Length: 268
Image 1 (tube, helix red, strand yellow):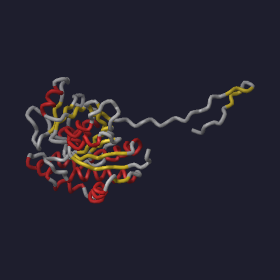
Image 2 (spheres, one colour; image 1 turned 30 degrees about the horizontal axis):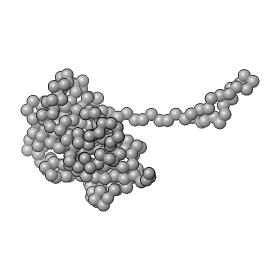
Image 3 (spheres, one colour; image 1 turned 45 degrees about the vertical axis):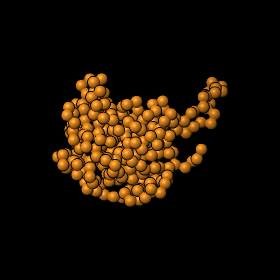
Image 4 (cartoon, one colour; image 1 turned 60 degrees about the vertical axis):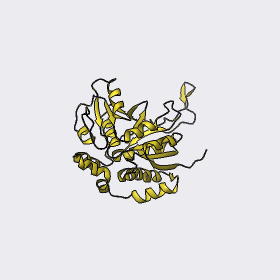
């Protein structure tokens, strides 16, 4: 097996099917699905991403007192309580499970996890809030990683190019290499961009048109402020805990003249 560690960047929900054989898939939808999802996981909520509004109501029907959250083309669907992360962060009802739907971000998450047997790619959810935590988890466990931006209406939007490039650049610092030239160019172009550029894209314009300025401000003001690794498995997001450090084995003592003698003691 090759010792080389590689990272690939791509976009759009339908692209996920091409990467199910990778070690790990990271889903990024900065405005706003994965920012909302990571914020909810940090609240210790149960979180259920779904591919459509119809699926949201179906899943909600199986839950007790669910919170429906999300947007489709920038508009909060009828029957949903909140659209994005700003309203979610202000809520105290963290015991309520959240069902999350969006134009493309939640579709990307669902598409990435087509094999629950454990043999497919591990699926992570990231945004600007939990980049370093996600990178540490990836670098310690996997050798072939793909970062997928959600994209919207056929466009790999600037905030997702930035988010995947920032994560990709951090992986390079951990010994990863770009898998192809397009990944290398995207990292080079976006990895040092200022977060203010998020406010210039089409997604930001949609938030302005729908009067969701609080969500836009929230995204831009919360960068790497959460030590949360967000994993998706069996239809639910959960907070992945750090693996415990291995404890060195200590040789069992033998007894000589009633005194315990340890062969080759280990310093701990």
